[in-house]
Image (cartoon, rainbow, N blue to C red; front, side):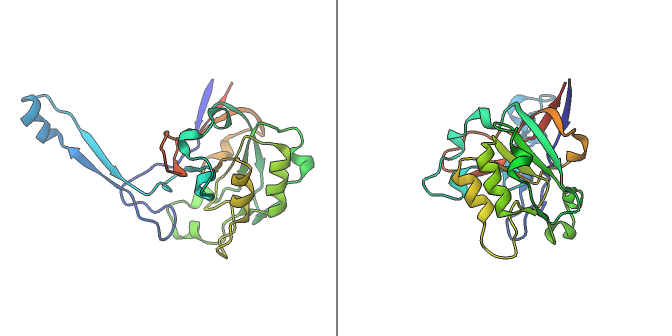
Length: 216
């Protein structure tokens, strides 16, 4: 068995999306302070992380878009844990189009969209001219009854306007979205399982995940 990490590393001060606050990664209890509590030579570190839920590689569930949609605490694991996966190589396409025929055999699969835009993560180029899905593709994904959809790009929607039709269509059908994936070039077209599990947080519609693929 081989595990392929598909997540970006989270660091203090990193920027995932322009305008959102950067995470603060710090010590709540330093090793030096711990010795005052536990005694000389007994050191522990307790961290403190303050961050926007849209940090690094993260998942969107219906509550992100809809006030009456389910939050992270109600996310079904069978949508995001060890789900059969398929990875479509969509490099070179700004507006990614997949048809019902492309997706007809992938019900209950994690559909991952490889654009290689993730190679620009951490640079200003990542925020410009990013690939996204078309509305027809979102409709086809819903028709195919896929488990979840992921992309290695800034956003699954175009960000040229404030409209988010892909989020609206997929989350309206309770299909989770995973954005800011990376290393999709290491995956085959099929024959792997996909996992991207967030913590169970009431009242949150997005959160960072450790996404990975399992290959036999």
